[in-house]
Length: 254
Length: 247
Image (cartoon, rainbow over all chains, first blue to last red; front, side, top):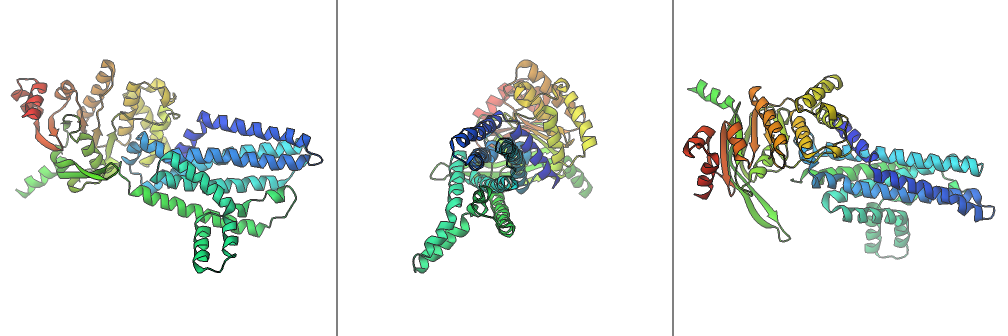
């Protein structure tokens, strides 16, 4: 456990100090500020536009950071041969993968918390609305991005960093649409179609289940029980994917 | 007799016997045998030089000893307390750009389970030994090649290992850097550590090593005391090396 912690702290330091991360976060804050302009041209929808556009900006830039850092996380260590140094010490491959993942998760926590708080304060000051759901929505975006990170780390252990990035983004997009697969299966009577739909539905994480933007803008009301159930499902999904990545990585030679 | 055998066995820190390694390369996964039965023994207190032309299998041998690669057949007997008593410097080491020298050594120490207070002392001691005290808080991306090599050696020594494996420790260094690294290896020998290193710089090998093994195309073709090699090569290790590898 102490080795996982040591690797996680090292990964956090290494990624948080990377200047590219700072540039991306600055862009994200710029986009959130740009929501003020959109809000100003929308009629009586100022607060709604700020929240909606702001959350999209948080998701988009969070996704950029999650995918590109996660894809290079393990790959860079192998390419630049820092794994030679780590694995010449009593470090297990599973400890390495978990340490890297948790370190990046800590970096993402700082990034998402920063963006979420910025959006919250901006909405509070400009639109005079303090919505706790905005912070809950940011936390759930963080959870979705952890799933994407886990999947990207898994793909980076079996493919190149670029392919892992593409697959990570694909899983994010598919995760927003996975509930449609289930609806699709209800259209026909074929057993094969139903089975295939279920397999796809189980394999692809249902990220849209924790998307509460409609609640944030007042179009719907999310239930805490549903958030807790789907949140638990996504945490379990992350654990399974990271364990799978560890299993693949254990078989690698350098 | 049994006593003698046991005494001899404890002196062998590393016994590599008939080590073979086959890897699959290219799209068609063509099998290539890199190691074809490597055999050599490193004894306690040796400074052992593993020599050979490029592609002889020196780095693969070290990687297999460390466990970065799995042997296809043969055996590796490591008579030290596992990875906990082993130090390793890879060839052309690259470390984390955004960590300082002391942070990096701290990470390496924690991987061996060293506690915060003794670790801080050990890091300070090693940075002093390798002459990087003034650069302890400088990020590694600002280190020169020689400084990286020295911090690489420091990380290999963080656990005070009995056996130190150095893969091309002198490669790419300027004369000053070479002298510094040689001094570190010499100090390890004085402290009774066992050192195994690869090198193409035969003058350094002649100066530092007690025993050597020469590899060619995945096999050890000569091994023995460096004194014997020098005697056969009229005091010139380069001449002896050429005689052996071209024979």
